[in-house]
Image 1: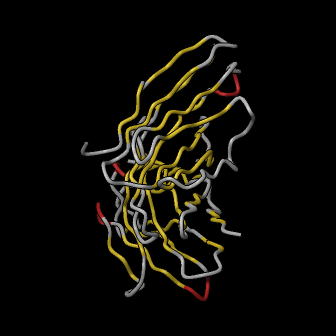
Image 2: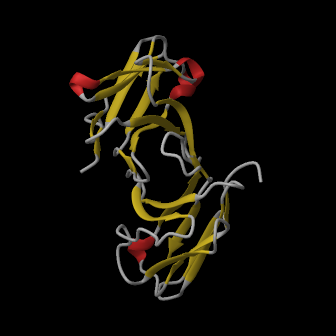
Length: 111
Length: 114
């Protein structure tokens, strides 16, 4: 069965520090993977997606993610976090139609 | 329209009343999803529509919840006899049929049952 695990419920980093949010998935075939961000009171915005090809994908707002099939992971990274990055981040996997989300990681940024 | 539109944006209702939430997907998107997001929680899948196929209702939490979609257009999520535990943000998303496409989300309807 498809599933997504985001092991970190909360992460706190200082502004300017690097960031890595973890995502592990379970899916029988080639997964389509996504990262979304949700700012307070807002809907979900797509940060980046992986369908095939280069395993390092670039997204908006300076985010990138690396697909590692051997580890069933799709971790999100940013080299230098800005205060405006404080939000909730969701990893998702999609098959033919099912779109499954992780439980989210809430990011807090310290000034 | 340009994006997924949901209405109302906020709804306060009394316990026991019925509510209807509306979602207008992006034109041409055949797939439509409803999710529930309780305060501080992740996204809970409710129901999925794909064109004229039978919907996947496996996520509906009880028979008080139902949803309809006519063709590839508007969808309505109905909650009958609302309970306080139904208080949440209800998110709608749509996407193209193909699996290698992303879902686009509306801003959600915040439902408060008092």
